[in-house]
Length: 140
Image (spheres, rainbow, N blue to C red):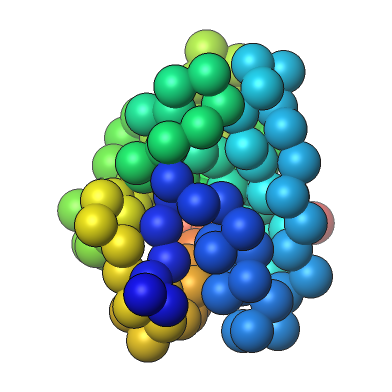
C-alpha cells in the first residue's frame, strides 16, 4: 500500500505532483499511458511499457530529445555514456540527440525511492546541459 507502480499510472502522476511537477496523465497513440512535463528547462515524457491494452504496465521510461546537429554522433553520445550513470544518450538517423532513463516498478517502489528517481532525472538533465556546453565550442 502506498507504493508507486506503472501498473497504476495515477500513482506515478501523484508522486510527481508531490515533488512539484505539474504532471497530467494522457494516452499515447497506442492507448498506453503517457505523461508530458518539463524539468531543468527541458520538456520530457514519461512512457509506460509492458502494457497490455493500455493497462498493467510494468516499466516507465523518462525520455527527452534535442534537435538535430551535425556533431550529434554516436561517439559524442558515447562520451556521455562512459562518464555518467543512469541516463543513456544516443543519436538517431536524423542526428537528433536522445536521452532515456528506464525504471522497473514491478512490485512497486516507495515514495522516497521514486522521489530519488525524479531527482536523478532532473540532476542528470542539468549535467547534460553542462556536458553539451563543454563539448561544443562557442560560435562566433
